Image (cartoon, rainbow over all chains, first blue to last red; front, side, top):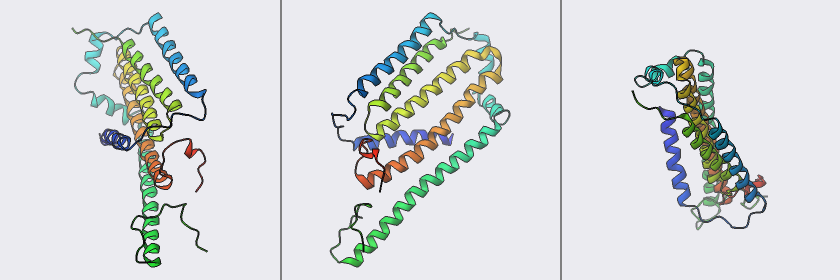
Length: 142
Length: 109
């Protein structure tokens, strides 16, 4: 499952990016949003739990579970993927391809700009800083 | 015969994860943590789908497996979303040296 490997990679990415995270500023611009969000989250959780407590979802019969999920279950998923869900399967393929192209495009554009900025800095003087200047904060060339 | 876990427990856990994700999206100001919370909500939905697929094992393999197959689709959508999202985030971080969503509220170059 390449998609799942990607999900695990994203987890590592999150951890790495979180390591570089300094503390969040304490004063939000919307002061009412924080308690409201906690209230809404707690309300939704309590609502679901209340429904479950009032009307619990019982398990399927063990015989059916053993029959349906015998083995790895990969065959059953494949039957679905290449049977009734084949259209969404192909759409997911298109989606992933679009995502790859978009991600590569974002990085490519950035790398091109950085190289261009370095080249410009090299032309400007010998003591130009090695780090590429931040785009958007460069002095406007007239 | 074994004793199956009631799907109520999984749905309750899924609701807790989803609530945590929703609160995270609304309260966190770092875009990375907002992404992480979105992932949490997506995976809470996945847990629910698997739980209900398990619940409907009585209805036959086709019904039970369709729930698990939708999880595959959700997983792929999450992967695509994160790939593009983190790409944009990295580009913005290079530009502004910040991932605070309040700072990013006006996206102009």
